[in-house]
Image (cartoon, rainbow, N blue to C red):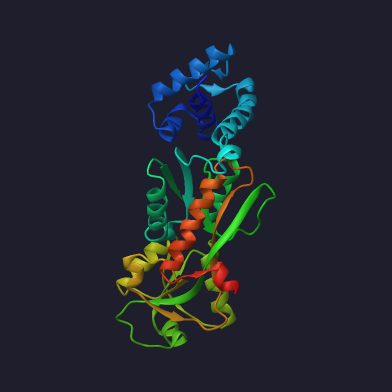
Length: 301
């Protein structure tokens, strides 16, 4: 029996449909259906309820998924005890917050693929709370996120970089006093529902600063673009690996009381690809260090 059949079964269970599973395992919808039919024939049982237009796992099929995950995990780590290192060839699904997708993540992935050229990576962007849920359900193998409010016992959180919050302005702004700039320039808020937005609002409140609201954005990338066009100023993290737009901005210190964002990798404690996740974490740390960013190890030194 091919291990591919079990991987496809897991994809169907986690993605919720043959169509979505097909995208995940990189085959056609028809191929997913054929693989699941072959798995049922091999096992001699029905795993799907086909009374509806879209097949759904039946009770036996749902019970089969955890067993399939055990088989896949055993298969992917079968050489660990023999070689001391898994064969890091295959595929991995990684999540990442949007602010890391133009600088940090591409550079780290380049290093990872340089070591393992046959590795296939699927990248899923999302906000930290959403990505944490995806890690918990096994939809992604690991995710690069901001520090979670809580880390369940079933998950592992490994921080690697610290980004201080700074005042972001365009090059056209020549003033140097952050409070004066915030009082006199239009302010672009980050969504208060985000960790960054909450930290910025708290800092402003503690300093009793009144700002002139211009707009509110949910994406740090969009905020950087607006600031670069001199539409206003904002408070955000000083990216450890900036993209060209963010790199063009002025970053002014908010002083010793400025809050920080901690970036790290979140994965399930039972992640079958933990060695590969460790390699990705190594590349992230190496990339931050190469760009002069503040790693957690330096922060603690």
